[in-house]
Length: 79
Image (cartoon, helix red, strand yellow):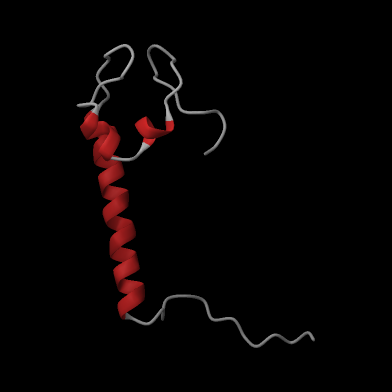
């Protein structure tokens, strides 16, 4: 995730941190690279939205079930 840094697949220019925010950056840049203007496929946006919704759904389920799906760890047996 941290290495190698994100780059445009066409011009290979390194993306700034502000250009690497999921969904927001894609919308702000109108789906294009800031430097060369190459279109960024919508599939990137769809994937980011889907995983974001999945994360929110799982968080919602865990909060409302009291964490019943989380593994329970027994008492610490070692002093």
